[in-house]
Length: 184
Image (cartoon, rainbow, N blue to C red; front, side, top):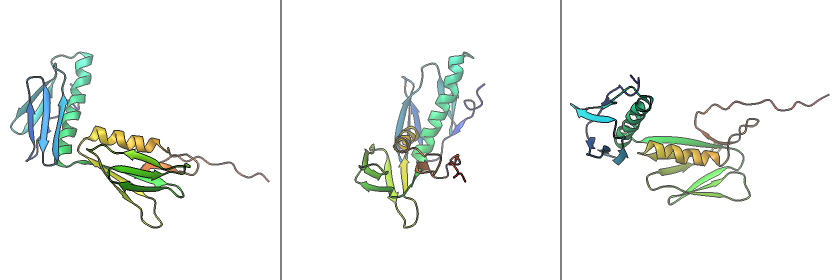
């Protein structure tokens, strides 16, 4: 049995889960509503405030989907109740971030500024304290979309291994390389 798939999902107070005849799972909570389509072979059952995901056979395909759909539904429950947050740090001289409406403007050392239109489900804040690196905080109830937007922003200027300049997640550990040494 899948170690992830067999774990039950506890439904917190204020969160309502419904499964329709087409096996679409809808999770509604205080922060919003999310829906995902579950494969027709996977069974989703709600009993006594807990949700369980079961598979019909031990086929490789069913095993793969068992843990996947359990994780997706768990992320939906956590998203509508608490929400998700990712923080990005801009490391480099002259790197700046500002937010204009739902557009994120980044100065990343290029000859031009980079503009990113954020989806409606993702909210952002840009904080620039004097003497510190700018921090961009992204919030959303959809973990998958949040990760996709954060990865897109990070790909604009990947961290280079010599000086550590670029866009990184807060707390991310970068493997640094030693540069060339001057000869005598």
